[in-house]
Length: 340
Image 1 (cartoon, helix red, strand yellow):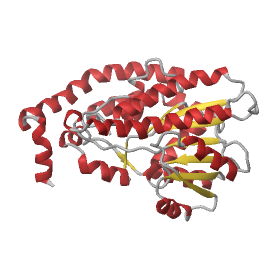
Image 2 (cartoon, helix red, strand yellow):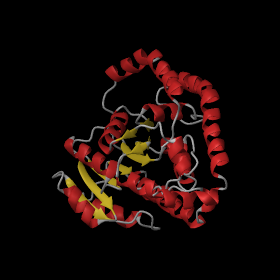
Image 3 (cartoon, one colour):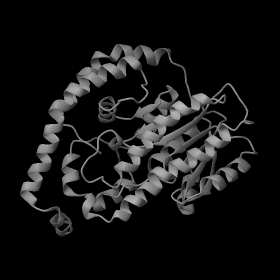
Image 4 (cartoon, helix red, strand yellow):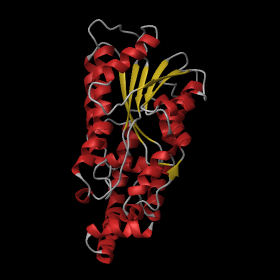
């Protein structure tokens, strides 16, 4: 969703090359930290896009996957892709949805705890924030933050209850945020706060789960732009300035994003980005967040701090030029309607 200029991308690539040997050595010697064969995985937002691709790929690795979405029709279409699927309809934006959903999932799983829960469900409806109704921000918070928080709260109370079993293999709770949680972009004012709040919740929970005897691993996936039905819906309301700022962004297929995310999970990463741009934005905003690799992430955060010296003036220059050319933002929507 966010774009850097080509020289900045080259600088980032140079930093990656400098650390290639370290990363390669780590990849060679690391074992699969999230094996899924025979495990039960629940995925919200699994009827299309990244969620559907992740469900299919995990099923191909031997997982039994419970698909969750509001649309029974789309879930039935997805069911045709693997024999290891079961589906449950639920609206994750509604209060108190998670308890009944987990109860139904546990019943299907013969009363055994779920092994992995991946919260993918979300939406983005771009628009300039002050020109959009405030209700839009509330809708995004309900789905993109509270939908995840509801699930996490209900799930951790099951997994980490005093009488819950303590087993060698950890459970995995996976959130899906966005690269806008690292660097906001004009046009995503309703979307970014929810995804940033989700990052903050995950950074807190990754510490708190260490207090329990049960083993639970927290992960966050940060996708960028995905060629999916969700992107088509985004583009219907996306301001022109947002498209300008994103013009150099790579657009990845749902299969690629899901595969890269699963690869990061199997490496045991906490914070998972799926493209070069996402890696750069993560390195540039680590702050007090946990590192996947303390050496690589710290060195790259230094490099990206220098990159921002060039990237930020370029971004703000584009915004100011657009404003000078097009006048008050109240005119933009009328221009977009006329252009379409």
